[in-house]
Image: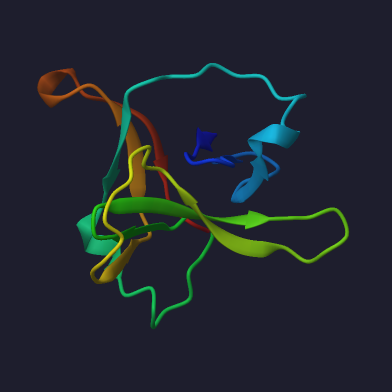
Length: 124
């Protein structure tokens, strides 16, 4: 699971039964896990695409300007799933510029020779 930022953050499931879905953190009172601070997101540039012209799958990373988000399906209690972008940046950054999507990405911690890949993601 990766947790987004903002005034009403969402948690995105990266695997398991709810892979590609998200829930609002305010509704996640029954979930447990370990929080790892200081992780980074690296994208596979060979999987880049223009999200304005192609369908955006859940678990696709979308970048625009200095902002980064992951697409996830939000299911309300009695409605159809809605695909939303869960913001991964915790700072106010520019969202101007060309949007670029990536189908493969990974979550890492550390830098250089100390870098460890925690999980690799590829939308199904």
